[in-house]
Length: 116
Image (tube, rainbow, N blue to C red; front, side, top):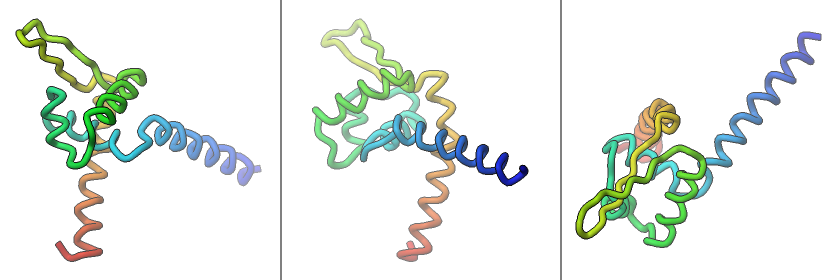
């Protein structure tokens, strides 16, 4: 019986990981969230500079996906020319600890694999 309960709990947890990865899938979404974790508010062009190799079109698509999933907020500022600013929502800010853990693990992994 305990084994069956453990398996159900394990399946539930794996499903939660799958759901999270579904929202954060792709090459760029986690990096976009990381940029907003570290800088809090960024304009489109600033995020574009943070992420080497991303195209305008891809950044626009990924930002829209993150906005649909309520992780980021897009604010149009009343400036001339118009400025658009992005920031994490309160819900998106819950990913900050995940980003910190990924940062720490990534730095450790880099040292482990290439010694830098």
